[in-house]
Image (cartoon, rainbow, N blue to C red):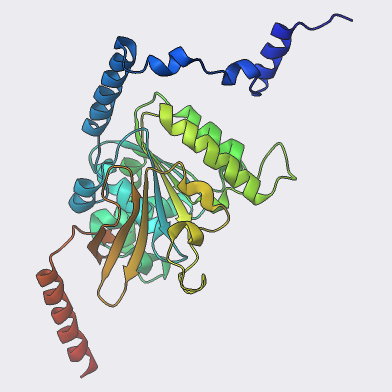
Length: 328
């Protein structure tokens, strides 16, 4: 039997992803050479690349959010909310302006059917209430108007739902392959709705949900570095009440809170049903606006641009007058 040399052993370990002693050796020259011409040129290039990335930002929902948060390639955006607070509505509001601009979007959803995704976007365009359709309260003529938009919307909004390939969107391997397939293509962004429903592995059925989600977290961190589009990941939260009053976002993320680590931006969506608004609370932002709260009016499924406190007070007064008249 042939004896393996040290070089052969090192190559085998490297191929298996195991670091060798040589991989972690650091010389004095490596440290002291920082600031030489080669390292300066590398930093200059990195600055130029960063500026180019910012220059390629695209629309994020409305003018207020677009101005506050650069929505651009090589970044992971987490949109967090608890059940029924608007994750799928946000996804539609991201897709809608990009469709209108002729930009392609990939939606990977285990939350809604493909027809629901397109119907939401059509309702945004027509100014109709998606919830009225889901409740069976939308007139047939209005439904037909929405359905007539399906061919146009589907040219730009591509949907993989839970029925695709017998549930491949719930498998980590299926999600990875879908995202890999659009690299280098003419897509503007990827939406995944939602994170915790990617819970299984095709090749290792004994893996726990946490292991699958943690694997996906690590992979997404690597994927975005070489990806030409932003990735939006929708994440389910525990409510503050269920977590004993804890407000820290990472403590309220279900299943695998470590997903915060590769994220560039983390936004919590908080609906205010009484005032007809939704708060977009920025918990993390490597672009520099963490801690901000953007309050957007919410009308028939659309998040409108932020309004002033005076405008909000006037809206509240108008709503109060309507409510009083309705009670008479």
